Amino acid sequence: MEATEMSHQAMGYDRASIVFSPDGRLLQVEYAKKTVRQGTTAIGIVCKDGVVLVADKRIMEKLIVSKSVEKVFQVDEHIGATASGILSDGRILIERAQVLAQQHRVTYDGPMQTESLVKEISNLKQMYTQVGGARPFGVSILFVGIDEEPHLFVTDPTGIFFEYKATAIGEGELEVKEILNKEYKESLSCEEGVKLGVGALKKVLGKDFSIDRIDGAFISSKDKKFTRLERETLNKYK
Image 1 (tube, helix red, strand yellow):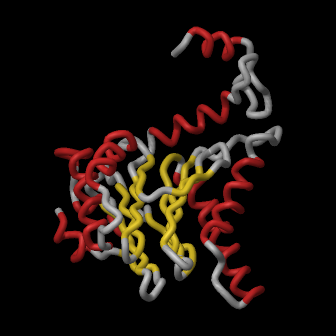
Image 2: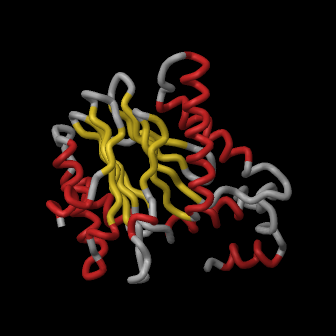
């Protein structure tokens, strides 16, 4: 830990997310971002025919029923999400996204644009960086969706969001991004995207890799429907 950070802690600048340190930092928000880096690895990939999500469920106990651990979520027919960090925070935000998507369908009789949904969730995250008595959400979320074309967005604890062609969040972020930078091509099919994602997790997890730890889904540009990757399908890539 840097000396300046320790001195800021001693002076109490990290006791609330609404207090700026003398060098213009919100330490509670930075701590939330560090929490994300300790979370399980999740990968999003935009392919020529859709979008893919692959995530590590990190099942550490033999007696846990692997199906009960959900890491990839359906938000709407055409939108999916996965999170890294404090997953209970992620679940609350993703459930909020599900409600927003359904409200949009009822109100406008049509699907919500992926970017509009991401902005709403990012606005909620940002609000919690400037409210006294509340802490920032300790989670980053990958949102994928098919509108006129495939999209992949990442929103972090600060409330900012970016669109990517392929990216990763969580403990293996740097290693997976290095693999994606070398191997990603815009011409990848969804099947090849799943293979790339599972292969990247296999390299990062090493001897701890197990297909039971993998959760995944894809959304095809053809039918714009969220489809979960079943165990039988994932077995082809182990």
